[in-house]
Image (cartoon, rainbow, N blue to C red):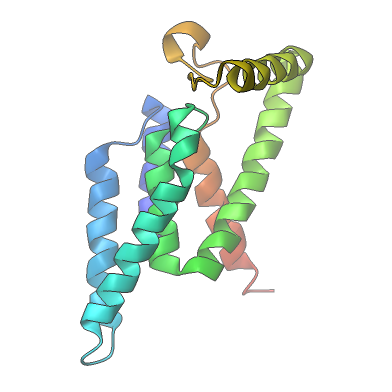
Length: 169
């Protein structure tokens, strides 16, 4: 899992996206591991559970992609994490990654001195969405640039390491 997250973080930092071949490869490797780790006769159940967790996580997070608040690659990485680690461990690692992402975003907003401006933009965005009942992208690279983009896969990777460290202490 760490190799998958490190690779995803590398692409996210470098290219502001995670290639589909990387997330697909991660998902296939996770499925193979789930089947190989299953006890004799339970391979089909293990594969089914893995695919269910993978799909459920992607479907639950899909609205965040529709509004462009989170990238598709980030959602696929989260789905792979939940599928490979299981729901409790996956949520533990992901919640730590989200916390780190929030801290990173706050630091970035304070350093660029535009926290107030972005909070107003968020408020106006939600107000417009509820009034018009139309889902429009919150973020567009052509309009907003990459100045405020957080490499969320890096945060997920750090959250996973943080989750693992709890076993050492």
